Length: 397
Image (cartoon, rainbow, N blue to C red; front, side, top):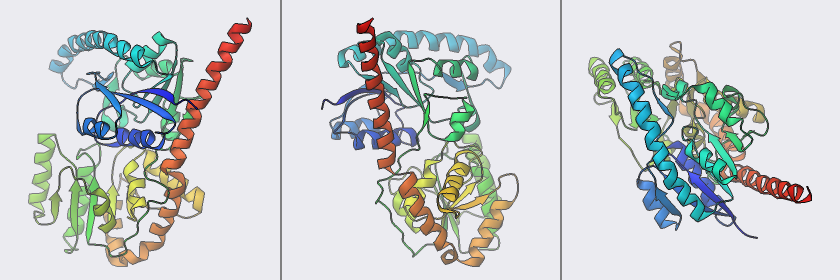
């Protein structure tokens, strides 16, 4: 059987969406011939080289931007939009040339903020899989150029086959058939690990921002640490906002946490950190999915998560699937996180081992690479079968 030729348009980063795409490409390598377009060279370029995956750098620009929050920024906003439209118009010719040379059966755009994949699919008259992984406004405080409603209208174009990574995303963008929900594949079904010898630290993984709830986490930990001296807070991620970083270090100084809070930056040993942690804390104000939740569960790590959006959906799915909780929920709007810290310190981590064991069982079924890739490949096949039937129908006419 001939491989399905897929042209992938990706974000090009080292987190979330692109890690999920790599799992898809790896899992379907005997069924799919990929060609990847990324907006800039990064660690992924080396990875694609090592796996003999063809790729090309085309400096695509997203159609989602931070909304101007001052009069000065507002004045510069419209010239900025004009330049962005012009650059994307120029880039579309390069993308179209690559697409024609590769001759894909399907174009698969791996995030919602890029539109050139959709545009090229229309020009080539082939189907476009649009993988929607983010709210954009709620989770990243950005805005779609021309607005959310215009983007929803594009999604409903018959040429698109949208994928939402959660029910929350599906509903937020008012999707309906033929859109489908496919939860990301985090690890292989049997790739689970449970180390019962936990160390006394709480772990945060991801971008250190207010949107990720890090300031709330830090203050909660500071209050907890004033009584419970044995625990540390480890942060695996970067803080790029210098004003937010200054605020964080002010909090650390005022609570004398210099020896208790460790910023690790970007790390490659996330699995090891999770396996040894007392718990992973996911305090995001909004999270489309929160793949780090399932990743921690595969690693036998207790998850303390804000009971909202994709985090809540994963917890709810686990409760529905197994009849038991798979994590510790807290409410961001209260001091609930502080209470969860105190409960864990008082009860001991062994008290939560049944929750950890249940979470491992759930994610190996609901968040495995196998289940995700099977659904993605079934979508690809259905697209080609529909195209074949349409050609037959046109020939009959």
